[in-house]
Length: 116
Length: 110
Image (cartoon, rainbow over all chains, first blue to last red; front, side, top):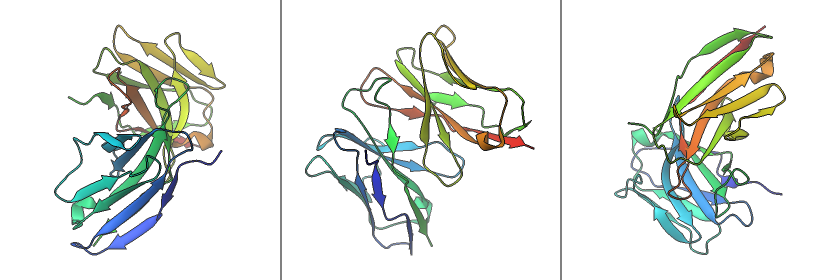
């Protein structure tokens, strides 16, 4: 079974530039998550999709961040314009629709963003 | 108040030692709990789920104390390869949400 796939692995951009991250979840996983992880911290949720619907985006800085999951499968997270404080690892994860001990969270290998 | 709180450590232990981590959660209605392991510059990976009755997987034992709202992870006979950050995760009953602690750093020393 293929895992969660993210690209790119690394991205270095100058501040005020736009950037986009892509994620393809595990096949059959209806729920998709974007997390941000800063150094020495645990992952923090940015947005959660159930199929194509964003059901929790309360932590997404909507002035510069946007996300979409148009067909309920893969997803894109965008930042425009990027700020220095956006430097972090952006993790995509997926899970089955009904969370249980048998359906925990599975992560992609993340995109490490550096804003200079 | 954070949903999940952990002692960030670091914990530095010699090979063969037993080490335990605790994690507290604030939502008494939380249903599922997990421990994830994260190696340096890698993504978190599921280590084990935490069942109400406690569960063991080789050298790892996870326990849940609902009365005191904490979960624990015990590692026996520590190996160098156990060096990583251990993340405590809770899933409340309000949907497909996962809350992460800040992680506890473990270094096993030869």
